[in-house]
Length: 81
Image 1 (cartoon, helix red, strand yellow):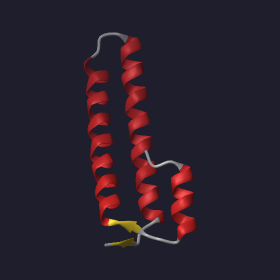
Image 2 (cartoon, helix red, strand yellow):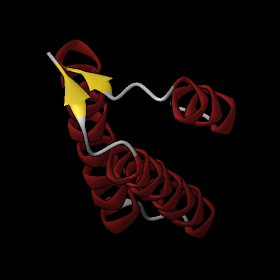
Image 3 (cartoon, helix red, strand yellow):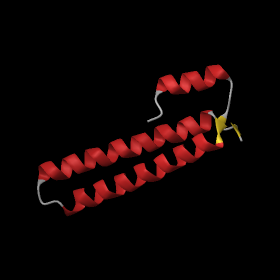
């Protein structure tokens, strides 16, 4: 994932996000959203309280990853071709 060190390096270099990087981040966002939906479905369908909690926690983590990717995009809103 796009971590804080990578964000700092991008900011320090002064360069925007390339179209290839933007496509990668877009794919990651789609994947994180799909995983969150699958986890929420698992939580709704599970009979076990422990599994419900595990799936709900996993969904929350996926949504946090999506938020982190969106913030990274907003911080680097200009990109190069």
